Every structure is written in C-alpha cells, then in structure tokens.
Length: 149
Image (cartoon, rainbow, N blue to C red; front, side, top):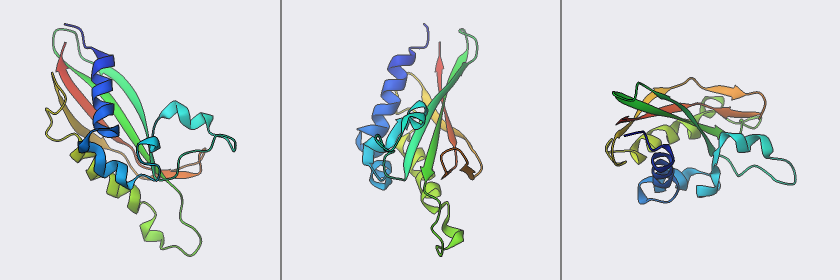
C-alpha cells in the first residue's frame, strides 16, 4: 500500500490546529490556530496582508524516506517564530517563548501512535537563530511519521 500523504498530513495538521491535543500550542500562539501557516505563506505577508501575531508556527513537509516495501518516514518541520527582544528586554529571554513551544508540540503528538497507521515522534530540534529575511527569531523542530508503505 502506498503512503497516503494527503490523509496523513491532514490528520497531523488537524491534531495541531483543531483537536484538543493541540490546544496548549494554540493558546501560546499570538493568533491561535491562524498562527499555524505553511512556510510558503511567510513570503506573502505585506503591510496590506500582515503576518499573524507572534509567536507563530510555520511548517514545511520534507521528503518521504525509505523504499515502498519497508518502513517509511514522512518528515515535517515546524518553525516557531517570535519577535526579537525590544531594547531593554532581558537578553536571556530572547528565545523563551519559542523554547516553551517545543515541548508543547511534542505533547500534541503523544502518544506516538495518535495518528492512524503509524507513529509520529520528534527526531531533531535545531539551534536557535535569527531569521535575517523575516527579522524574527526561530528554532526548528522536526517530526517523523513512520509507516509501512
């Protein structure tokens, strides 16, 4: 059976954007569920079409790894974004809201078999860095949805 990417991705995003499991994440976001956007949307924001309030989360689907006769992984990276600190703010708190989102994202997808026909687990948390293009702070976290197919 082939990996049903549209169904899997819809279930993963629904868990984050509408299910009770993602409510703690949505509560921290400046715009709630509207603050969860595909990475391509970040390029479209203008003064007339402003970016959602921060913090926000952008996501991007990665490759599907593995041969069709073995376990396969569908990779998904979330990029929590936040505003840089204002002058006079405590510099040690620069990434505090972003870092507080990381365990909430992991809890959203617990237990690992919460998505039918596979397992989803965090596989990598990247380093903190300022996004020079957007002028925001970020730190990626990647999940792998493992399934046969």
